[in-house]
Amino acid sequence: MFGLVDCNNFYVSCERVFQPRLEGRPVVVLSNNDGCIISRSQEAKALGLKMGDPYFQVKGLLRQHGVAVLSSNYTLYGDMSRRVMHYLGQTVPGVEVYSIDEAFLDLGGLEAHLGRHIGGSLTAFAGRIRADVKRRTGIPTCVGVAPTKTLAKLANRLAKQDAALGGVLHLDSDERRRWALGQVAVGDVWGVGRQYAQKLTAAGIDSAADLSRVSEAWARKQLGGVVGARLVRELQGYPCAGLGSSEDGSLRRQSLTCSRTFGRPLRERALVAGAVTSFVARAAEKLRRQGELAHVLTVFISQNRFAPGAEPGGHSRSAVLTLPVPTSDTRELAARAGQLLGRIWEEGAVYVKAGVVLAGLEPPGRGQQLGLFGGGPAAPAPVAAPVGPAPGAALMAVLDGLNERFGRGTVQLAAALGPAGSGPVPWQGQAAWRTPAYTTRLEDLLIVK
DNA sequence: TCTGGGGTCCTAGGACCC
DNA sequence: TCTGGGGTCCTAGGACCC
Image (cartoon, rainbow, N blue to C red; front, side, top):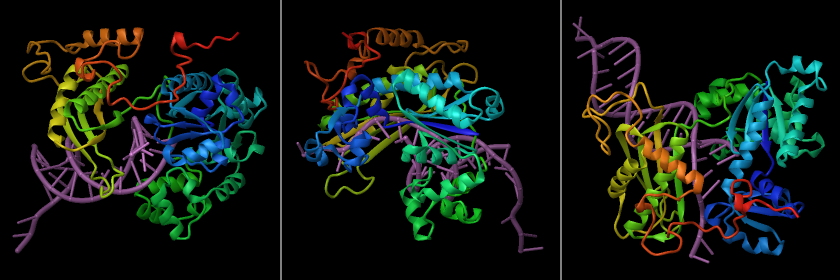
């Protein structure tokens, strides 16, 4: 049995914890660079504001209705997420952190145990989790409980829709499962996106219930092979996916990206190179926190995809390099990234965004590919060097330590600093309405009088 | 003027291995 | 006449998720 805990309007809810005056008012949170709406309160949804609406297109509407507008504050959301997940991890046997605001719970075998303790049902247990998360973190959630992950997602959606359910829906019988399937449009099923929804409705499949009745062969043919087959089976109540392992509640990623839209369009190579270097540094930091090394490095740069005449996908170029020796050393990754940028750079073009991806992640230690001539290119080591910490690891540890203690960016590569002079780096995005880091910076701590 | 930033999984084809 | 069988790795692309 699976539970799915999903925080309601997560980013808005995080902001409301520290600004209670935002309760009951329409509130939106904007993406990086204050580009589009990425989180909306119920009141904002009721005004017809959509996920992904570009800010400049809805500015008038926002003003007209007195909508509170906030820039995104990922430091805050990440920390609030950690608190929620930590509580869940202490409360149930297994947790898979699925995204910043969602977690799957392993509720297998709990029912018998619960019978003797609280209220006797998973429904009551889920209600208690919900109340505890709210009390401990201030974040409202809904909980779906069902025999498969896909059904738990579906139950969660219904719990969010219908306030009468009290934030919890447990699909504890076949009748209830069938009822729930009938309530949900096929396009709202987890795993059915725009393309599939279009295809399905064209074939007369309109609800989750309809989808649960198609043949496996049809699902395979129409919905991406085995993925589609599993999707249908899950709707029927047969689990096809277990709880992803994240024992300590932290996510272990298979790739790490850092990319940003620039604060303004850039045409100077040195500036874009500076941006790429700073993105590499950030990605490498995440990589080291995860305790891994990367084998594959990708750099991409994008021109304005909304420019008239831009063909879909044609606005972006990327270059990939498989490193001879996996590394997490910012200096080496930055040097390689600079070379990759040279391969895709077009003089005269105007770029609006860049990014780097670290992939082929592996833990250090045994099994590591060593350089044939010893060490990595950045810091040659003797051929006979025993397997041990990578060259430069100590330096990176000091770098991370300083930045953690004194704030991100305290020590950086000079190449990531931008042109001499003062002011924000030219690739820094807009964030006109950013709230303080209430929970992670001492200076930003709220003072209650 | 202005349009996010992360991720996942699967398929298919080609090159190459023994 | 006849032309194996079993793999891996890489790339590109497509779908999906929050």
